Image 1 (cartoon, one colour):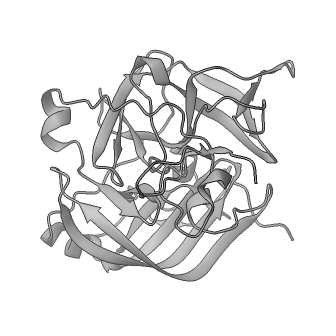
Image 2 (image 1 turned 180 degrees about the vertical axis):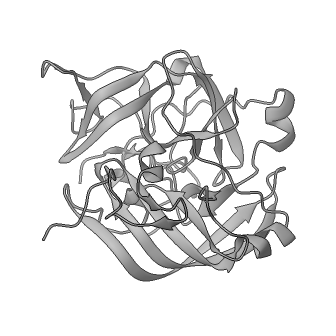
Amino acid sequence: MPPMPLLRARRVASLVAPVLLVLGVMSAIDASAAPSTGATSTVIVSAGADAAGRFAGTARLPGCSGGVVRWPGALDTDRAVVITNGHCVRSPFLGAREVLVDQRRWTRIELLDASGEVARTVRGVRLVYASMFRTDLAVLSLRETYAELAGSGVEPLTLAGGGPSRGDRIRIPSGYWTEQRACATRGTAYRLHERSWDWWRSIRLPARDGCAIRGGYSGSPIVSRETGLVVGIANTGYVGGRRCVDSACEEDRRGRVRMVRHMNYGQQTSWVLGCLDGGRTFDLGTPGCRLAKPRG
């Protein structure tokens, strides 16, 4: 299969750069089938508070990165949640309109402390949600509670109520690689297309201005450097090749399509908050929930 931009990575002698930033390592997938990761520059940020706790809340999944998040109304006794990309949870990738909900899983996940050391190895026991339509998102429920994670030094992240604006300073810590990129966003793309997938309001992450993410960054949280809140997750990047096939392409409100050189992308996470019943329970039936729902 021709290379795609998903940023999932394969930890072998050399890196494969598929378009979908299955920025993680899709061990069971030919990396050429993952979304592209763009440039492989190794610029790593280490400034101020970012350096002191840059990896707090990050996670390492098979072939991908992720983040431990805590819903606004969650209790210490609630099972903890990890978010990553939808393209990180299955081989082959999900279909263009496919949505998975409430499936049993047994996923090994390493949770990192603020310095990037493995604080605890856990199991994702339930796939709460996964889709690559409108967004590229998966929500995994762990068997461990927030209280249990806190006892191991794991600090969950918090989702922002909205996406970033053009020029906002962000950082992207990868739990898979234990490295970080940082840049100022270039706003959002109205629609983003890659092969048959269609994503809405994707966050632009300029590779040449510090966000040169690579395979293995898929699912990495995009964190505001002003607020410390998660505004998105990285998912795909520029690798050249065919427009909308080997690299993602943007479509504006007038239907004009273009492929932007050296531009990587992430998906917004604020939509998740609109699908929480009482701020605590993920429920696609919550009034105002904008995430894609299963057909039928």
